[in-house]
Length: 102
Image 1 (cartoon, rainbow, N blue to C red):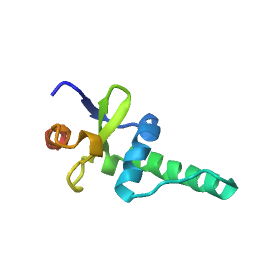
Image 2: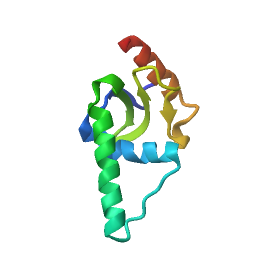
Image 3: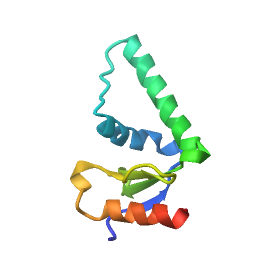
Image 4: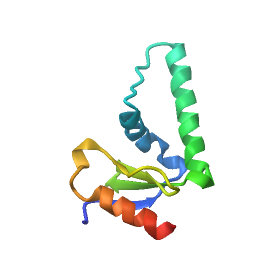
């Protein structure tokens, strides 16, 4: 497809994947006070824990430096792709990369 590439996610990818995870969960954090900051730090820590868990490794699709989709390698649902990238084959490529790693 050429407009994106796929690789295994690492904890360094958390800030680029975070908006995609929030999009799936329909969750947005607005940093307004100390409670919101603590909530954001907790959310980031849980995402980092997810990315370092060998039982649920994550493939990430990038276009340049922007994460445009991801897929869990271990038996989770169909890959998630950002709305602006749906229909461009990212989901198919992520699914094929996931199958190749099994």
